[in-house]
Length: 146
Image (tube, rainbow, N blue to C red; front, side, top):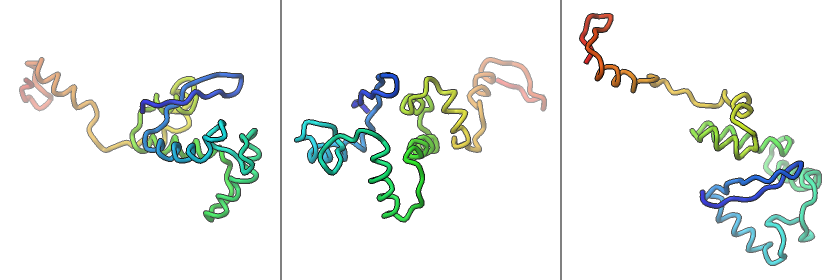
């Protein structure tokens, strides 16, 4: 992900958001349609910028959900879906926090930790190798370590 988007949110905070590589061709395709208007990538049916979320929600979002056969849910839920899918697939929590605009990973973990996969693998196994190499002690079973 070498591409990023400057994003201005509430109170004029500007931050960088990565553009996920697999989405880039779709954004380029959309821009090939709307770019000639010297505006944003996504425009309304009048080829103008969307000025507020209410218009998107009340027109396009509800229509898309209905066409897909889904019951209504707030458009805001897409960010929860993003975070959940990223965590379930092992993405770095700090990167996810940054993408969501959280100041640190505390907020992200408090909301999404339940979605982090917990494999049944043995934890801290690397320590056993390290201890075994540096020790002449015996284990509780009187087996020599090292």
